[in-house]
Image (tube, rainbow, N blue to C red):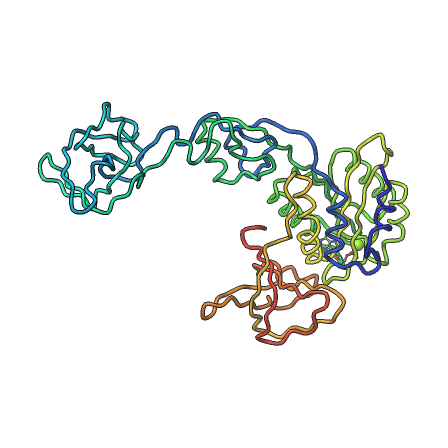
Length: 427
Ligand code: AMP
Ligand code: MG
């Protein structure tokens, strides 16, 4: 395997001491490839999983020509070009109960949505426009050949892929698979992620808070974000700022996970002894990313047993709770989606909105403020969620979007247009 640190240092625009947000994301994604391994699951269990093998349609859907509306099944050729046509009612075609027989010249049958089109029929006149007088059915002019009919195979054709491998299975795909009569599919295995928090000041739920201590919240937000992404989460608890304890934790995590996520311990004051440790356990780059919040971050591979064991990717996130979430969403989430076998996508869909408050911003770094979207006179507007310190987790909890202040951007005035990344429904 080529050295990660070598690959990184040879990459264009690589400055570990001031890395552009977009470049950091690209560098990570370029190095990763999807995990291998499939499993068969029942169709309902496949929801939100990544399809591993194309689902090939064994049948045409619909499997027969049928009516798209409730109405009257007619032969287009029987209809007068102008004026009404009088036809004779000879029966009814229901969904699941076909009209046996042929519709001959001058005849029609009542037909329900989904019913097989009787032989000879190539047009359905909707019931709302048709007049019935005893046995006679009067069709108005203006009908078209094939109208209100659905052709066999117009949705899915036998022998063709109905759902492609690599697709995340949402309710629509689950429905398509069911519409083919298929009860089981092959999905990629879930990405296994080990996580632990570092810091001597961290206190666990259930123990009283000592002076100067904080409860470990990062492990809970990380657990939540990873669970939402469909990862198998291995929670390794809190690890003290102690080289032996950290080494043991990294060895254990690398033995069982595809990726390791840590929080804390990568800021300047702490990075030195961690750097030494990392040099022994694998290859890890320590980045200062040109962003706020979330400047320090470690990325690389933990492979304590060398090439013999696969090891795991490391994302060493900062300790501040908001920085954890921002770096997770901007870098780790796209990376985990790629590991899961999905096309890497930008962190979230982005669009312009009018910012109703002024915001200070210096050039040369990307800032991710947390915002709330609302509509005013049909226009999307955004307001920051109060105090934006990197320890103020409420700014994330109250938010439904990131307000992205791009690298080169300067101070934003009230009423200026900004780009927002929508988190709602995605996080
Ligand atoms: P560090 O990056 O380790 O220097 O931590 C930066 C700040 O984040 C410090 O105020 C830490 O107390 C806080 N912090 C670190 N880890 C956690 C955690 N797991 N939960 C809550 N706060 C944390
Ligand atoms: Mg720390």
